[in-house]
Amino acid sequence: MFRKIIALAFLFMTFVLQLAAQEMKVKTFEYIPNDLVARTEPRTDLNGKLCAVIRVGIALQGVVFDGNTIGSPKYNTGEYLVYITNGSRQLTIRHDRFLPLTVTFADYGIERVESGNVYRLTVLTGSMSAPRQSQGNFLVMNVTPTSSRVSIDNGEPRPVNADGTLKVYLNNGSHSYKVEADGYLAKTGSLSMSGSRQQLNVTLQSTKAKLTVKSTTSGSKIYIDEDYKGIDSWQGSLTPGTYLVEARKEGYRSATTTVTLAKQQTETITLPALLQIFGSLMVDYEPVDADIYLDNRLLGKTPNVFSNIAVGKYSIKISKAGYAGYAGSVTIQENQQASINGSLRRSNSSSSSLSSVNNGSAFGSVVPISVNGVTFNMIKVDGGTFIMGATKEQENPWDRELPTHQVTLSTYYIGETEVTQALWKAVMGNNPSKYKGDNLPVETVSWDDCQKFVDKLNSLTGKRFRLPTEAEWEYAARGGNKSRHTQYCGSSNIDEVAWYERNSSKTHPVKSKKANELGIYDMSGNVWEWCQDWYGNYSNNAQTNPTGPSSGTYRVYRGGSWYDIAWYCRSACRYRHSPGSRYYNLGLRLVLSE
Figure 1 (tube, rainbow, N blue to C red):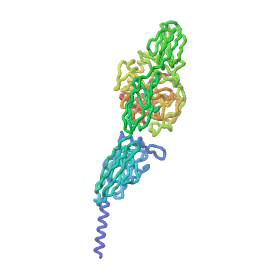
Figure 2 (cartoon, one colour):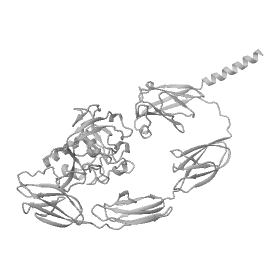
Figure 3 (cartoon, helix red, strand yellow):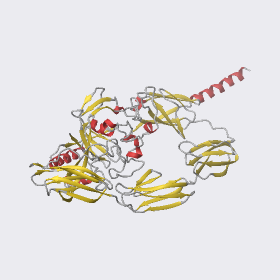
Figure 4 (spheres, rainbow, N blue to C red):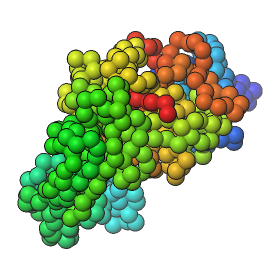
């Protein structure tokens, strides 16, 4: 009997020692600089601060994580996304078949994790005992679209995961499945399980129709059921039904048609040429025989009435030798006569004043400026006070956008658009841009390049242009004292106002998206825009006309670009780079003090 007891004790100790031998070990722990999952799939701690994310690679299911974690980890085959609070220094990993493993980040050169950053932790496991032969295994399905629902053996439909996957444990034998989704043809099938894991890929066919719309008139905007789709042409998928298709262009009568689409139908529509709309202009200016220029084209001499002028907004100049010239803007409306009258002052100066024609922009005062045959508009921004930084509508902000603080600004003028390649060429005589086009924003220019451009522009015009301060840029982007407090410049729907990575593969013509409250275009997306300031941290103090730090290493740029995700296009988002840096998504916008 005693010998049996000794034998049993020996067997028990052997079993315990074998369990003790099951250990987990860290292979690597490192920072991933370009991973944005902490911002695109964010969680915040109890103080509202953005968590860090650790991608834990470990070949186990049912792992438990301890140590300042927030919520349950997200699991995808072989990897957990663990959300952990800012400043955490350790993470403990537990599994019922292994000894606990505590990872001290400093042992791998990282003192603590930081808010919004992503790290990768790879964990190795010791040898495991051979599993008992199962009577079934997992079926792993990869389904497109991700809105699909799956029924197995006529059971209740279950939704697939956000990445389109679904795992189901099935006993050995034959099984049936059905995959369905709204707007798609359902698909059924069968499979046989024989003890091994199986993978099944299912792609549903859409019931949507394919529609191509083409406009005969260049520059037309395409709308379908009042929803803006693009310029000149559009191609996409629509659910079966009847749609109103329209081509619009300022100064032209719209062309419309209806189309009825059946399931999986392919249809092409070409809209007819748009008819241009005209008005007239009376110019009654002294002295007689002064030259009248409309958009830098000589129209005639004073006094005069001009008919058949296409409706729209124009820059107008009146000049004569020995007199100070007049520069302003005029809007021509259908079947109406616009009127401009006045007198030129005798003067030896040829500079224009910062004033606009009474019937100028619906948004506010617009000042047209011309240089070497290129005209651009400056928008008046009335001075005021605003809260700068990560206000409540700015989702998941960076720490560099905090703290919010009060800023008061004087009145100034800012460019209606980013500086175009046409204007850069008129001033500098070259075009450094990667994507060429006169009406595209200039890019691939450094902060230092912009200073040379501004100096030469000031020499040609006699004015004092400059880059905006960071505060002036953000105040204008938010809509100044007309702000509707949107996340992006002019809207909280980014597709209305910005070219960014989901709708672009390059730069786009300026003014091809919706303007903000002040009539300013493209401050979100298209290209980043250099600011005058050195980069520095914010403070709580209220400021008046701030100009940033007196020195630094990096200059600020703002606004996001065609290359970036929507998050970078927020009005409060800040970025920085050395003054000599050039990128094909980085340009500039001008400011002129009143």
